[in-house]
Length: 485
Image (tube, rainbow, N blue to C red; front, side, top):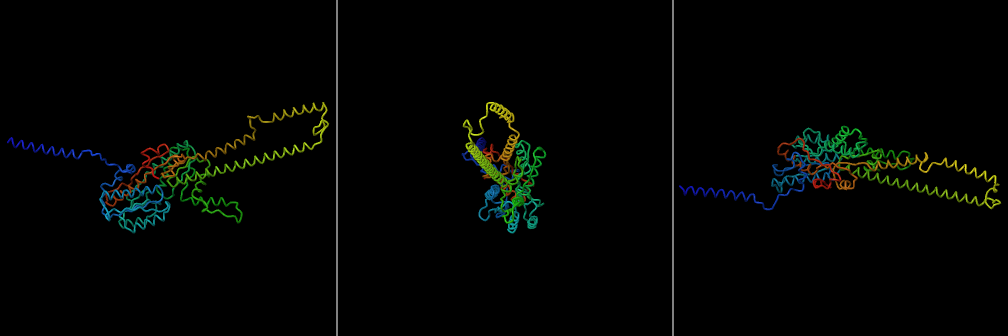
């Protein structure tokens, strides 16, 4: 009996030691750590967090996800595309798919962000390929109803990214909280200009949901909390041609028959924005609603500054020439007076002019001369007390200087980054930017599309976050990871 108990105890001890050994083996630190991907900071901004990871997604081999953006060339949309492609790579790695089994994910977009017709054509082409799901960033929130109906008939679900659509069948929308972001831009700009003055909004289009939300929220924030800040003008990118036409008409006024007429094609978008800025000489601030309009504002302000410098240089040259001409005229008159004086007949005492006066006449003349000098002195303004004419001239100069200062101190804020925007922030030409998370938008859109295909259920809206970036914080590590060029 004792031998059996001892054997059992030995067996139990062996089992415990084996289990402990196995546990030690599992928890032994080898020096290797799992590193976060470089883009993890972008995924951390996504809410709900489930849209920032591909774990748990199950799609059939060869499934096809089609993503359609607004543009293919800007820094923002390049970052969106990068997010789309990274999500596709992570998804295939998670599923272990290779070769023809890989999940096919494509990104297509128009060359220009405002080209609705091209985006519709791309959508038609993608529908003809029968993808399992389509994600689209609608340039026009009311467009594509016919195409969406066709997709529904063929069992192709639709999700939205960046900008929503009014179509009722949209499964999920992945985007920035535009209302909150625009309100942030509004109060930042209002505070920067001292909570008083005129501001202008430059808007990327008049048809997308993003544009509508940003403009309305920006104006609402000012109306609610900054009554002394006035939105004097809202300029839409798709209306710049109308402004160019107006510029041409103004330039052609007064031209004689046969003179070359200006056409709207003679002016660029930068010219049109500069023209609108110059229509508001007291402008204190500008807010641009996307990266393209922010760059356009930067170029227009730079061009306007160069034009002012050229006008100032021209005025200085003109003033210098007038002074030179005046001095030459005065010198010429003095020379003529000297020549006339030398040609007068001499008097008895050898001096040119009238005969020398008698002692009595000389004394009277001296008295008269002193009286005239006293009168002139009393009529001449004091050195430190300018006359009315001089005071008017000084006021005019002050007004011109103030006008120049007002135009060179316009505060510019906008949306999104890029190489030009970051350089402008560093140089102080830009005061602040709402920086979205385009990589996160692209990544979360693929996750939302995959969830739609496997019928896992979707949130109606997925928020991808944003940051407020200035010269002071742009080099912070947490901020720098979210910037894109």
